[in-house]
Image (tube, rainbow, N blue to C red; front, side):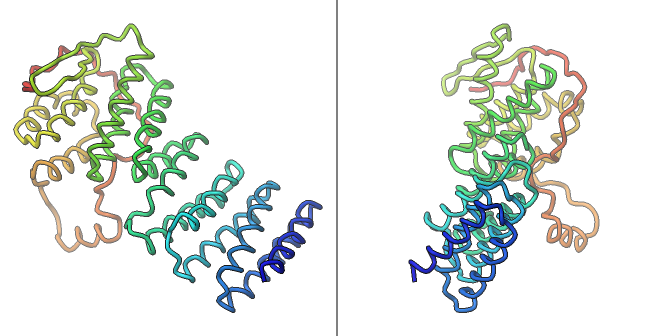
Length: 330
C-alpha cells in the first residue's frame, strides 16, 4: 500500500513539475476521496500532504490551499489528536504558503479549530498559535499576529513585544505606551501574568537600548525595582500595574488609576481593558447596565467584549511629560 501511495504522489509531482497543476490537483482530490470513503485515514493524509506540499512549493497557493483544507477536514473526520506528528504536517504546510495567499487565513482558522476540538486547549493549540502569529509578524500582518501570539507559547511574548516595538518605531516617540500595552493587555486578559511581564520587559529594554537620550530613572525598594520614564507616564503606569497585580493589591490599583486618570482619559482607549483587569485581578465589579437577557445573548454571540483592546492603529494626541508618580511601591 505504501508503495502505491508513493507512486501516486510521485506521478502527480511529475505533472506539477510539468505545469499541469489543475490535472494534478483534481486527481489528488479524487484519490484522497476514495481513501476517505474507505476510512483509510493514513493513506488519505499521505496523499493530501504530499500533494499540497508539491503544489505550494510550485507557487500554486489556491490549489495547494484547497488540499490543505481537505487535509484538516480528514483530521476532523478521523478525530485525530494534535500530537507532534499531526501538528508537524500542518506546520510544514503553513510555512510553505505563498505570502498573501487568501486561503492561508482560512487554513489557519481551520487548523486552530481542529486543535481546539480534539486537544486540551479550548482556544486552540499554543504551538500552532505561535507559528501562525510568528508568520503573520514576518509578513507585516500585525493584527493577525497579535491575535495568535496572545494565545501562543512561552516564546510568544518576545515575538509580540518585538512586533509592537518595530511598529512603534513608525509612529511618534511619545506613543510608546500604546504599543507596549498591545503586548501587555492581551496576556493580562488571558490570565497570563508571566507573559505580560516578559513582554513589558522586552519592550522597555529595547526602548532604552535604542534610545540612548531617553531619560530613565531606576527606582528601588525593599521588594522591587523598576525603571521610570519621566517623559512617558503611561509606560510607567503599565509597569506599576504589573506590580500591583503581582502583589494582589486592590488599593494600589485604585491609587494608580486615580493618579493616571488624566492621561488615561486623554488616551481614551484603555477603559474597557482596565475595567476587565480590575474585575479579574482585584474583584472590582464592572457596573452592569441594560437588559440582562440582551447582555447574555451578546456574550454568547460576540464573546462578551472581554478581549484585548480594539485593534486599530494607535493615533493618540500627544501626551505631555509628567513627573514620576508619587506612588508607594514598598
